[in-house]
Image 1 (cartoon, rainbow, N blue to C red):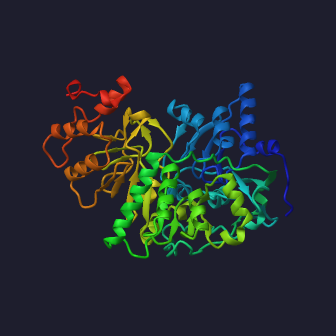
Image 2: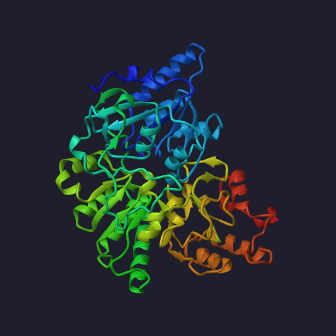
Length: 497
């Protein structure tokens, strides 16, 4: 069957008001760009005519501004799941002008297949290659690509020349069987390949192919500062101590690391520390630091869902595919983030906390308990199942006016039962085998900024008797003070008791 090449504007006409649309990619990597922007322009034109035009959206994770940003500004999003990072979309969510469902990334594809989330009308996907018999080769990110392609009535492909056809072979594409027929996932080491190198679809569902040459919208990472460097060094030193104590195998175990500057700092410090052997990565996002360490021989293999790297690094990967293809593997997120695999491999999981309380509970998502930042992403997929789950965070934010540590988190994403260690620029709180009061002492003594230690010690002293000494009259006083004066350091307990 011959492929039909069309413009982005023509492709947009296959998307209708009230359709549910699935998009490929994971972070800005692998996401379509020109067709979503054309859909946004179509929505604006329909709105000017007084006609309704909104779509439901499923994505792998966050996307680029040409997708989330353009559609948010066009007021074209009816609902959105499962994760986002766009400021315009975030404003809509927090104004409750768009329905948003925050969910574990590993669960989205299977929940679609189970029928929990409704049908998929259209799949808009980016490809490095597509054949007339329906073989789609993904680009630098996979996400929920195989599931939305199988479920959708119509498929629109952005064939992006920025990604060479020769990338084929870097992907491991598979969908899980649904219960009661599901078998184990036969991944026993990060380099195990269990699927195919492309997505196979019925070519009759491909309504059009749009040629593009658009770069990924991945921004550059900001330079590391003293705080992020100190966090990275503390994580590295902690893991070396675990190795020397025999609590980690001498061969080490695969590492999962979240996205951002702290994650890059951690990887950099681990790579520099020769007491840590060369190691493997089993994660969701593969960042610049992974590629650098792979070239230096410090990372042996990396499995993920996307190459969330700067465009300069991506160009380097494509220029040296003979080196990287045997060392990199990109999978759908229900495999890259699967808790079964994380538990089997015995991962070290390192993720970032937005806020933590002194008993070890973590808030990853909501500012002051109400305003969505990004979403839980894959942190929960890995945290509960990891051999060693670590959360990192700077001890303060906004010039010291906000403490990352509070008496009680304003929103709970990861409970004390899943969090094994918390690390800041000041030190490490190893929470394994510790009671609530012991955890509080470790966190205050080793992780909290000096400006906030007296306040949190006073809070502990006010706690009512019981296993966990909370004071329900003032457990959210830090947040109330921030709302009142803008600086948690102004807190006086007498104002709240």
